[in-house]
Amino acid sequence: MPPLPFARRRATHEGMTQPDFSFETEARARGFARIAGVDEVGRGPLAGPVVAAAVILDPAAIPEGLNDSKKLSETRRNALLARIEATAQVGLGAASVAEIDRHNILRASHIAMCRAIDALPLRPDFLLIDGNLIPRDLALPARAIVKGDSRSVSIAAASIVAKIRRDCVMRDLAQHFPGYGWDRNAGYPTKSHKDALRNLGVTPHHRRSFKPVHNILYQEENPTP
Image (cartoon, rainbow, N blue to C red):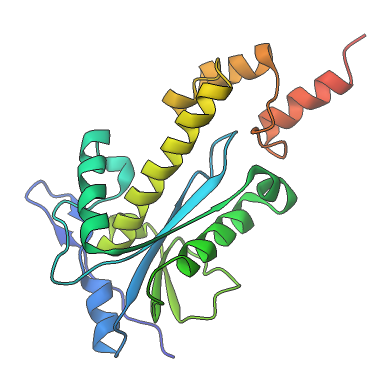
């Protein structure tokens, strides 16, 4: 199957760009009816799972204002989530800390993406994947799109769903492991999180393969004489 041509992004009045439906329209023109955008959240944190979402938008009911979740306020993300879940098909998937440490974060992210796709109520026939790689386990036709959450509304919707769901997981974990600030930093390596890691130690939810965590464990096992 020949690659789809690159789509142009829509320019806003501020000179910025927003995701649009161009990639989806091109795929539909080639006969694909159910196009899912797929994105993950949580590659960079020191703790917690990586979470992915897959979203099939209804072309007749695309929520206004979809964008990369990182560019939206929490209030705006939550409002869009309600509209996405009311009008679109949504699947969620995750890869655990143990899987991240067993494989690597890229492989774990792809595992989470495949699980999200499998969780969709309807099986898609084409996938738009955020990033520059297509997960190797996919049996469906797919296209990788660099910075896809800023270019495709379907991927943007997936980024919003994944971001909110992962933040909920981290807020729940923060109740059981106070002191690390996961309800505020979502497990990312902020200064306060790294300070807490040194002062309170490593939890079962920290990624031992990540350097800051690995270094602390090494120091505990090999204390300076």
